[in-house]
Length: 116
Length: 111
Image (cartoon, rainbow over all chains, first blue to last red; front, side, top):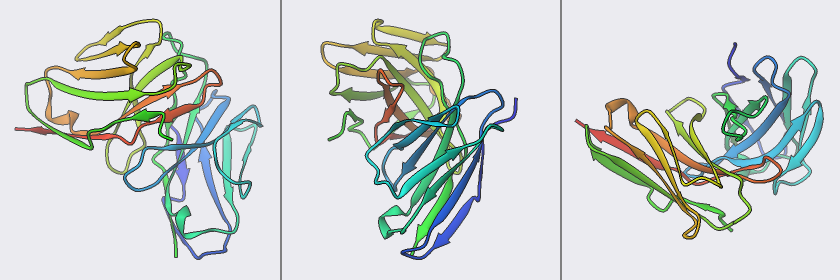
């Protein structure tokens, strides 16, 4: 089983620009979730995709959008970047629920985005 | 409005002793509670979970206790080891599988 990978590792953008972050899920995992982790905070749910359809969204504006592809890869797109978008962006993939019944999510290492 | 709260930003524990990390929540609709561990420059890794219908789940050195009436859960690590030094996130999963995380507690295991 390969792990969850994300690219790039770090990224610097200026306010108003657009950015695309990429994630490669574990093989066989149909669900991918994206999170934003600001400094000193826990990960905040942005949205989730299941079989290429959005399957839930957190309190993020429409300029945060995503795509999921059949090859277990996905993208997070952010338009009109703002200074407050500076954060660690994490993707997590999950497959069938574990024995406990909880959705065990496997996280990638994250992309550190800095908006200047 | 924080639905999952970890009120201790950091905790220091002597190696070999018990580490107890606490978490409070506000929403009675959560189905599962999870603990994740995060090392620097890595994503969070799943540690242990508990269903809302149970009050205890144990996995090796890790035990999670759930007190539904108090809307409180805790993670016990015994004995604590140096490799346990990390940030621990408490998280809750609702009916739509959306996971809500607390702010985390940084655990330092002292030699």
